Image (cartoon, rainbow, N blue to C red; front, side):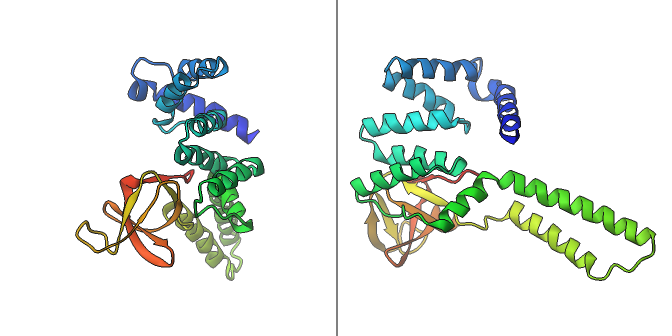
Length: 243
């Protein structure tokens, strides 16, 4: 039910923002055209339409899978993995996970280790909005409960502290990335010792590897690579988190 509501809202948002993003072009027709071209095996043409849609920030799971298949067929494993990562961040799927493992192994790529913690993080990303709504709902109900207790002139004990804790949790989840972002290197990039083009060059990282972002300083992102702290330009990264 929640997914049906989400799809309806997503369609409404897409249509609402159509003039700003696409001008006179209808995004629903754009997707339909891309699907039609894909089914006719006109993969390059369909890819162009899918990417025009994806660059706006909107995408569908089927579109991501198809883009990944097309990119893999063209030998572009970096973007094949990128679209698979986007799909997995929305819908944790063991089949997709297996495919990412296969591609990473084939091209000797690092950063694609998966375990129970990674699966938990994927679920957190998938249900992030619901978690926020649940905390806000709990806060509202608890505030009402405290108000009733106060009117009845009954002792509240530690309940106000619990209410503050819930509000604090909502604030932290809403305003801070408690789980480090992930990104894929989209082109061979220099690794610098500090966030500056004039810093010492400590190595190079090839495209396709996935890294964890530990911080950001202007156009530079801080990462750990082979037990070393390094900085890479943001334009060399494809962020794969869903939020």
